[in-house]
Length: 447
Image (tube, rainbow, N blue to C red; front, side, top):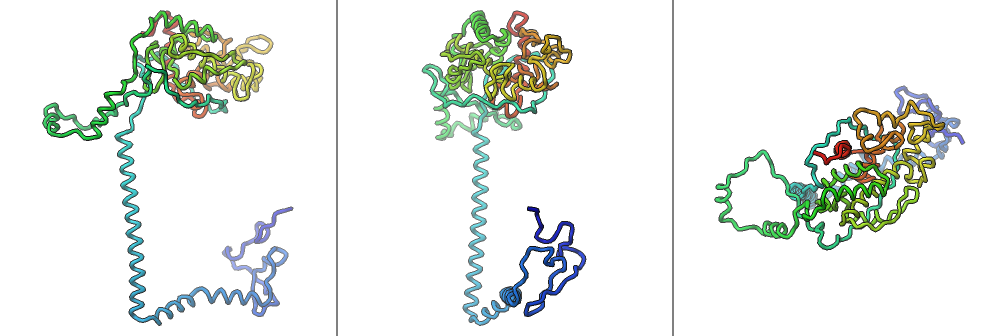
């Protein structure tokens, strides 16, 4: 069924909205003459013709209820009232207006006061928390890669309900991070402070704050029983071998996370060497993915080897997820899930990694090899790794896209869900880890 506009065929004038006066035609059959534009003749409209005799009645009735007649009747009725009643009516109307204006002003004042109070509370009570701040500067010199604009996989680890940590680990009672004061006002001298406060009694909020600080634990919290560096390295090597990860990758992540401290608990609750969250490790232990060679485990994050194994398992989980497992449960690089890295290479008719063609010959246009062989990316060979490994492969088989290594490191720090949605927003972390890798390749701890 074709569409017919209610006001005539396309391109024809629309009567009263047109600048030029339109020709009209007379409709017969009504008690009074009713005129209508000629372009609204029966062949150009689907409107019913007016019913004789009814149109005039409707027009007259509508006119009688509007316009000057209504104002005349109202004036006439008011003039019939006595002076006292008119005065009373006018006073009542004025009173209603005054009450309405007062209520509006009061509501506005209360709203402004509430907004000001909320802003003040936000200024004095919000205190950012942070994880362990790096004390050394990484030596990564490569330029940051652009934020990925491709469709990435979106499956993320579920957020488990936090559970109380085991006894002796004070993750639930850390002292609040102090809020820095303004820097543009000079601090009072010791004498002035003592004079001004010597006779003042402490307020209830000050007492409560001091009581809370006296029972909380400063963070980061160090138990003081950190294992030796050789023991930590042995644990990391064992975890890397267990999960088929490059040794220097695991060493660099551990250094970025805790500076090789198994005895630390950070302000956000991260535990030990690999900074595993106390409410995350039960989920991670339960992960069993045949396609990624991952089975269920029972690692204890409060032990050196258990913590190292949990960190390695999570890195393996992330790298497998982005490589080929994905949302659709890919089983291998040859049978990848949709929107994984291997899937993009498959769509482009390439192997994954693409250093070689399907017939085994070298691929001179390899995306993975270009990133690997970039002089500013020496950390790929220092992992150690080769072009036969996927770490340097750009995500969507596109020059300039984030490689697998960057995606894995970013998600380890900020979470896979955040990285999927916003891309890599923590370049400082990614470059920090990649800067430590060459130093570990030299056989020593970062200086």
